[in-house]
Image 1 (cartoon, protein in one colour):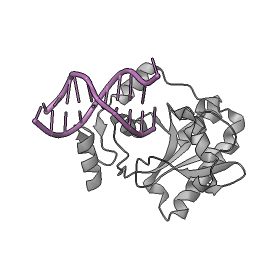
Image 2: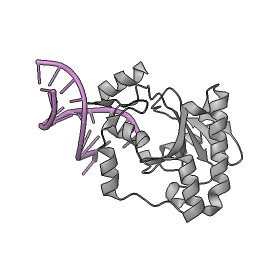
Image 3: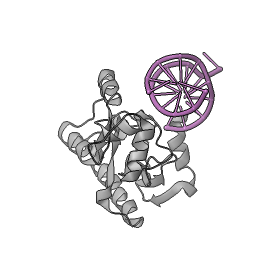
Length: 176
DNA sequence: GTTCTAGAAC
DNA sequence: GTTCTAGAAC
C-alpha cells in the first residue's frame, strides 16, 4: 500500500469513525498536531480539493456541519479551532482539518507542519467555499509559492513571537 | 504523511 | 560535542 492511501484505508475500519452520516465521516488524525485534531472526509471518492466543483457545495457544507458537531461533542468551543484544507495536500481523499489552535502536541515536529497550518498553505473553510462558489474550482499553488510559504519564519499564532527553531516554538506554545 | 540520519548550525 | 534541520526512501 502506498502511504498516500492511508486515509482511505483507515475509513474502512469502523473503529476509527467517531461520527458517520450518509455523506461523510469524522476520524481522529493519526498524528495530531494539537490537543484536538480531527479530519472530516466525504464517503464519495474525491481525491482532493482540486477535484471540487460547484456541484460539491452542499457536500462541503455537510463537512463543515460535522466539523462543528465534533467540536460540540468534545465540549470545546468553536472559536478555539481552525477549520480548513491544506493548499498542498499529501494524502489522498479530500479531508477537512478540524484542529485546536493550541498546537501543543508531540507530533508537531517540523517547520513544514507549522507553516502548513499557519500560513496561506492553510485554506480556511469559508475561503475555499467562497472560491468554489465564485470560480468553480481551486487552483494548485505554483511550486515557487509553496516553497516561499514553507520558508516563512516560525511566527506564533497567538502573539508576535518569532521562534528561532521548532523546539523553541514548541516551548513557547506551551506557555500560552 | 512519517522515519531515518548526514551534516549544518549552534 | 550536541542540537536541529532537511532530503531520501529501490
